[in-house]
Length: 597
Image (cartoon, rainbow, N blue to C red; front, side):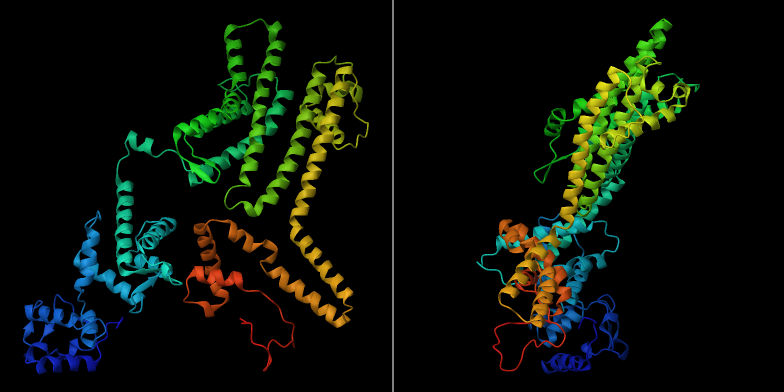
């Protein structure tokens, strides 16, 4: 039937029944070329004995009579094979089009009806897994995304449950589409496709740009922008302390009067100013929901990170240096200018704090839960290296404010006073790392009271930072091994039980092997029943559907049931393991269990 092949016996019966009813046999005889496949006999050019004709009125009337014989009669099936759309289906289409914003021609109506009949194998419903495939096969150029498609399907299923007057839906009923729901979904999908094409072809006006906001915080554009800002924040976390300690603000020989590093820093400042502006136009997540109200977003941002972001993004050092150069101040005050510029650059150290904040948020994003341990380890390592880098740069900076013949640089090696900046930086970083890790070799030591006070502060900070990082790493190791520790605790209890009952060595080995294999492969350690009991009914439905869609591949015998039904069954099953040669069931045993092998 689905292939539109007309059996010889049906052809003979139609002709015979029409003649028996007193009709003309000539009007129903087909030539030999038309008999093998009805698909070749279109309504527009039916080959009938007597010449090439359109659809004769008598044939249309006869088709209607065949439809009235019943859906499962041979004449009814012949009508379907002859591409005749039943009146009941036309009524469904007409009812939908009363509220729909698009229209379907008779040929398109027939095509979707035939696709539904073929996919459902002649039944009255179609499973959700097949609905999308059927519609996309008919529309290969469909631009509607997978997630949007499933949202439309979910809304149709929810409407069905809301309109259902029965108290109980049978297992799997909520996962199937009847033709009325299927046709309604077709209209919604085609309308969304039309909207997407119109959106692609239309010219954007200023009001359209305004309506595009707020930006989706989980969208592709925001993800790419955040990745770029993440890399720039990492760069600033190390470049800002270095420029405070070793960059004296002297202008370069470029046409703009800035060095290459200063030019790149200006570019970074512009990027962070744009990021500050985008923060007012980006949705925020609150308790698992995305807030899209621009006024609420602006209020939240102003009360949280706005002041720090704005202060760290404005290039105050370049502004002051430009004003100073324009006023042609005396050269005697150049040292005061350098100190002022260094103080202004310290504002940019807030970017390191923001970098840490973005690292903590990254662990909570969808898709990054698997890498949470790696992100936490990277955060601890970054914090340790950043603090060492910061304290080392400030240790070198203190030497510049002390007498050149008394500071720690002169005490260690007088030749370092005129050495390249990199050598002093490496030595200062070495001292800071050795101090905060509580090693303290004593080859580099403070020489003045100011340097000794700074060393005391560094030792106190280093003790806290080092303890924090080591504690974080230890907790991560415990988290990774948490499941194994629970298994070991369970195994200790089993071993103690076997010792208490004085099992034989062979029986002990089998009991331990059973728990070692079965317990680790089951959902018992994850408290699945407790989790499913605590969530809402709608969320529980989605969880069970997700579990069932994967579990049905493991147990093909459950195919045909709804995903929710299979998921519910899978949570009730207990995974056990039998060793080779062990008897699963023997004739005469009590049959109170059902095994899926």
